[in-house]
Length: 338
Image (cartoon, rainbow, N blue to C red; front, side, top):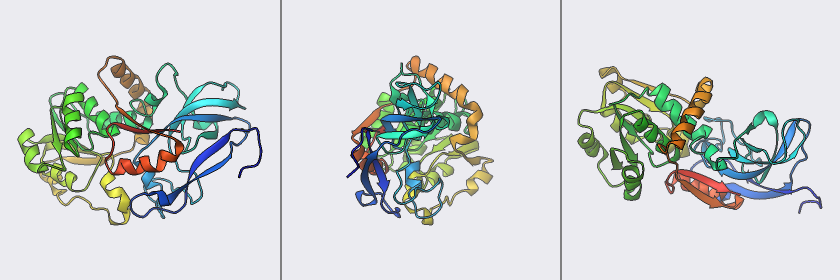
């Protein structure tokens, strides 16, 4: 039991054991403690919404992975938005809306250098989804600067009903491309063509992906924006056109067993067709954040982009929401409201 205090009680999700396969409730526990008093240059933020992102899984391994590892006993890394409830930093006022690495907890005490003020005129969750670093900005950089998508090209997006895929597909459409989405299940396929207005959708769980792709894009694809990896990457490589581009944004199908990652076997298609495959993270394009933020904001205002949200409620729901992301149980952005 926490000591008696007048400080707000912080409830946080901490790591009990490193994860070797699929995340489960046995890997986490909820702890309670008073929110830490802010030191000089720090603020206390009450969490409004947390982002459930695939990169979180890569931080839970028992050895170095794609991202910095969470130590056992520490709060799970997560991006979030919230409001300042206590300030010890000039220019940062109680009530300011902010975004940053709040972690999976109800209160975060952080230096202001780790936070960014956001416009409270928009729903705060927008800064985790369409305008979020790991979602909208990531999709923008991949489509715009890595894939270099042009009007009239054919673009294939895997994980197209997920948060990043959803944004990548829509951005490619705005740029004038013909877009085909890959997703698991008929409901997601209907979402891609009905709600997002894509030119085609392939249900990788219920259809022969290669056969369906050849029917939708008989001349091949110019760009493949990959969030999944595995077998789908090989199928895309087999259908890549001359001078095509493969954008490696993620490989969610591989994150649960990173000691045995399955790479592409058809990579020689790149040489045969003078194509290229390039990986990236959004951090490689920090110089373009301002441009991306402004452009995405404009497209949102014009109604050219949409971001469905799937909300789970309560900090206790965080572990289950993370597992649901890897089981494909969401459409659009998965969020937790503590």
